[in-house]
Image (cartoon, rainbow, N blue to C red; front, side):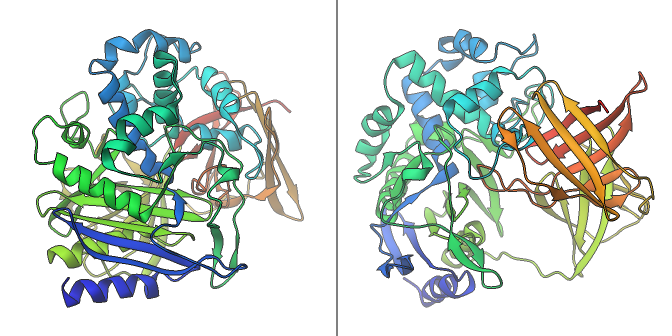
Length: 505
């Protein structure tokens, strides 16, 4: 272990301070550093260790895809009819198994849709609830294979199809086909988030608000659900690092960069995100739910993996990438100073916000992702990005979109009841003391009232509403008139876009 790596590991515990955490860096199967700090439970004074069990949340997705390919070499044929039956309300434009694995299906995220159906963040949400939402899916966000949008629904469906086709419990298949070969001795599938892990507590909050125990009552399978310790994930990295040496290995099959239907490279495939730390290519995934953040990533060319696990909500991805940067000598990070202006894509009810304007780049938040682009505001930036005072074209892998600068806030009031038949849900909007509030009422219940902030003409934004998963980011609400003259509110979140609620009174 180098002094730089040791300092970087110490910095993680300081910079991303919270109740506790663990980390490791593995190179060529050898553990360069392993560290645990803080408390697994602050009220009981239970110390964090490398054996402490965490829910690894969405890191589960790569296990789901590996299991799929291990069991079904030709999954498109083997599972096609079952996939069709799982989405009975969908028309002729249907995603493939590959589209699900690559987050290119166009199916909206069921956890986000649960908000629009009136679900409370801490209510029990089980597989039957998820199945009911997915069975009602009658439209897609985009044509399958043409765009990327992260969606838990894809991997929930994959795990369900695997169970149905094999007649075997998903957890048993994971133990037999993946955990045992990788020597992940304490890893297990625990679908009910209210019951795990027993020896560690996840905490919401921060130093400003204080930390408090998070409550989760959702059931996960395929999209999340695996619980594992740092030691288990170290074993997984060793297993993957060895497998990466062999062409055609299960790991290389899920780690191969994917593409869209037109051949354009895609940023995500088979439960793994492809990216860069400095100039080093990495493949990995973040996991998170209320009270937990996990990230594992592998720089295959350098043969180095990093794992970070927090029982609080600090940025585990940033922490893990700082370890990769230190271990490989690459740089990462940017400096910025805050600004804020909004741009809107009216046809798809999408909102983009320029949140900083550093000397060497502009940070744009669009569809939940942060992108750094050049500051030459009046000139084309590259083949896929352009920003000026009136128009934004952020770089997006799936396709180029135009966002027009949003005008100043208008004085029109927004009130009434708006219905979405696809979700059987109603959005109720009212004004009290000059402030606009709203609430979702649907088959899962009635949400608390939340404030709607006017951003400009016919555009509002909600606070970051909590859901059964990590909060999806603020919802944007845009008022439109349909061709038949009906007043419509288009509701969008990064993982569920352009959901229409029509005025009913």
